[in-house]
Image (tube, rainbow, N blue to C red; front, top):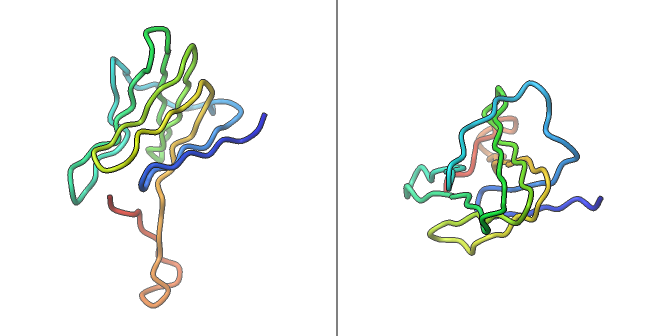
Length: 113
C-alpha cells in the first residue's frame, strides 16, 4: 500500500500499516480536538464525513495520536487552513518541529500554530 502523507499547518498525518500495541483508546463522539494552537487558540478538529464513518483514536505514552478510520472518510478542520480529507486507513498524527541552528544545534521545539 502506498504511504499517504497529509499536512495541515503544523500537523501531519502519515498512513501506517497498523495501530501499535500498548496504546490507550480515547473517547470519540462526533468530533475530536487533535491539537489547539498555543498562540491563537484555533483547533485542528477531526470529524466523520458520513454516518457510516467509524473513527477510533489512540494515544501512546508520548502523547502521539493514532487514528483508525474506516467505513468512509473523515475531515480535519481548522479556522486558518483548508479542510483536509483522511481516507479510510490507519494514521499517525505528527507535530512539525523546528530548530534554530544559531541558538542550539540539538534543541528542537514544536511549531506553534
